[in-house]
Amino acid sequence: MSTSSRQWLERLRALNLPRRHKVMNVCGGHERSIAMTGLRKALPDNIELVPGPGCPVCICPEEAIYQAIQLALQEKVILVTFGDMLRVPVNVAKNEVRSLEQARAAGGDVVPIASPLEAVKIARARPDRRVVFFAAGFETTTAPVAAMLAEGVPANLSVLLAGRRTWPAVAMLLDSGTPGFDALIAPGHVSTVMGPEEWAFVPERHTIPAAVAGFSGESLVAALYSVMRQLTEGRCFLDNCYPEVVRPGGNPAAQRHLTATMDVVDANWRGIGVIPQSGYALKPAFAAHDASHLYPSFNEAMRKRAGQMPPGCDCARVVLGKVYPDQCALYGRACTPRNPIGPCMVSDEGACRIWWASGVRTPREKTPEHADA
Ligand code: SF4
Image (cartoon, rainbow, N blue to C red; front, side):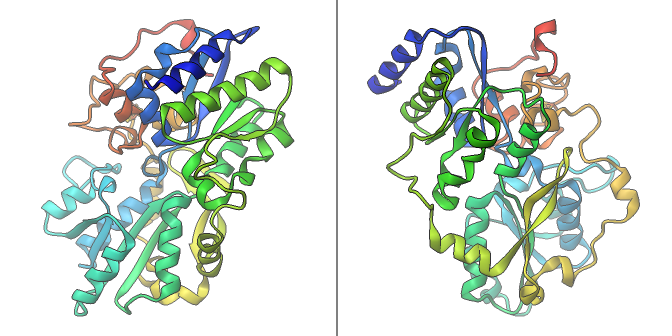
């Protein structure tokens, strides 16, 4: 931990916190920094850090992954996608293909990519093949997809879009009346694109302190100090603790690309359900590049009955900050990174995988304190 982080921690410890407070962080990158630096253990006992909806892979609807698998296997497209989607399992019988990785092993043309530019490159290199870019992600990932579309893509490239917006999930938690947290650390990278103002509703509508943070320990502890100080002083506002990167208004060019190519729609979050205005869909003008129009959906009613999460998997409640990863009965037993049961153990941004990587290897003992937040 840097000197500056230690100084922020000392200030945090000096605050006179009247009671225990829960602070939610809304970013897989934040959770990784928190877990890897051991920040939780360094905090005063009465501050609890809860990982929230910060993993786009974890909430990507099961039916979208199933569709991507079927497009690779049945429609014989070249299916390109970000690497951490490959091992996310869907709910099918054991003898069926349950992930894109297995689809590739079964002969499907599944190619991991790191950026939309690679999707364009592959489509240009293979004009004889149809290429589908399965694009799941939050605003930071969806904006480059929008830029790719705005700039023009080859005729043989289409997008199976599962883009999601972060703030509506937090709004849903707050509107529920039982959000399970007293203050919020808002995501830095999303704010870089969309502007920190998107999070102003948290203090303004819900009188809950909020601070935008980057990924360094210093920025995170500064944000924690900000929201804790607000709580002790009975104030609440949106603080920007990542000003070197997050500017008022965000990135106007990225926002223009999003607006030009995509509509904001109600969207399904895996295991959670439909959240109003939380997703992106391609505009009708891009129908020729919209895989959801070009190909069968493979979303028959039976699949919907299969359920969004594997039996026993608590990912949805982990994503919503209702339980910690090691409170899932399968954590470290049936579910490990080597044999993941749910998406939170697959993605680098999934809380279960992050906790495992940080050395938490066993489920925690059940105590009344660990009931739902
Ligand atoms: S430990 Fe595995 S089964 Fe449990 S919530 Fe996490 S990913 Fe799901």
